[in-house]
Length: 297
Image 1 (cartoon, rainbow, N blue to C red):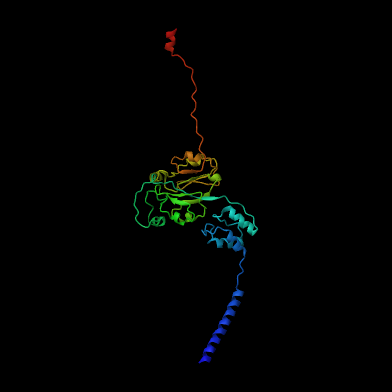
Image 2 (cartoon, rainbow, N blue to C red; image 1 turned 45 degrees about the vertical axis):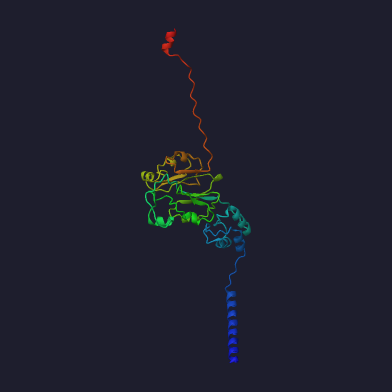
């Protein structure tokens, strides 16, 4: 009996040893050598794993940077400073990228858009958008249920309950793009932050004809084209009844802002406009009426 037990134990031990040897040989044969620079790059990254770079987290970004170079990828959270450190670690040169920020292309606050329906259900923008256009006559505007707020890891966006429209905190925004992907209406856009944070953009996404858009929202773009006509830099195009400003061409002259009849164009961080002094009326010399002159004579 004891010999049978010993034989069994010995057999299992030999089989275990053989399997261990086989596994070791296979592991060595198919072992993938990982570049140690991947760990170095990953340590430099902020570790947000937000996907704003287009990769599945910081590890995937580091692998791409090492294997393919950093020319085609960018970490929006770390910005140019982080990218410069990565370039130095990999011995590459890097051209700085203009910082970007998320903007909400909607000015349809509660005082501009009247509530026409009442929604009683799952309080998310995606749920409302899948069922109908929204609780106002504008089916293009912000739904105000905060899907963008929930996906932002940096607390850079909020919905003011009094206004009912999402607002971006430019001091916190890292341009990761999470809010852009989360918005079912597609009204959040990444744009260049601009010199000194100054930028001009059309804060409307309504593509209805002018009269319909205006009836739905007092701040809607009506596609009148006045902004396009005064722009000297061909930065504004009108398509589907909606104006759009190309930030790569815009020179921040703000003529379009003053020309827009509905106030649909936003200007951010701009200096105050010069106050125009009232034109001075020429002083006329006092003259006596003809009748008085004849009486005096």
